Length: 229
Image 1 (cartoon, rainbow, N blue to C red):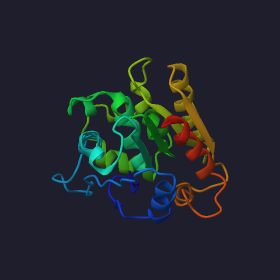
Image 2 (image 1 turned 135 degrees about the vertical axis):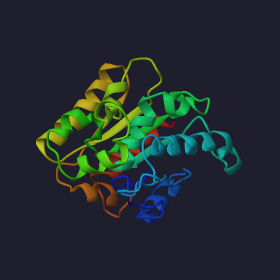
Image 3 (image 1 turned 90 degrees about the vertical axis):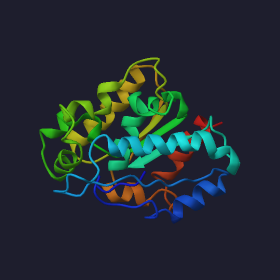
Image 4 (image 1 turned 30 degrees about the horizontal axis):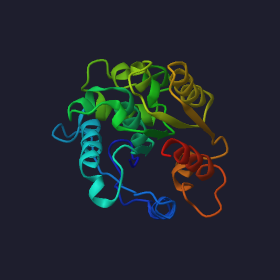
């Protein structure tokens, strides 16, 4: 799931290295668009449209991936930035997949890579551009800072998939990202952590599958090989 602050991005953006990486490993690679929010346009996408679109894509894959040689029991849902926020919500809050008669176990592995959106209540204290994007896209939801924070929905034994996360950025961001992984682990969800402290937000995405990358690609592929085996 691409990033772009809920209002930019496209499924074709920066995927060449990722397609090669995953196809060479024997995986099918699917990049998904979701409806975008246009600032000031109430008819554009707003909560829960982005999450519903991604859940619909998972449901379509679940029903159709076998026609392409895939295995519906081995779906990994990955996203960066806003895409990571969407992935974390779809992977922890059962309502979105339930609309398609699926449970959280329809996703085998989740990779929400680099977002403070796991805990918007804490992140809100810092304000900034990311907070503004959440407000534009999700502010129509009652108490959106809490209800669209994946950390709110973590429960043990509800089918939340194995999860890998990135930890980087400011002390507040690192704290939120680490806390998300810690709370998942406390709920008996198997987790993995990528220390990307030397990378920018954009580099987290660009490094996936990039020739010579030693920070993101190796731990991500180790996690997926284990999770999807």
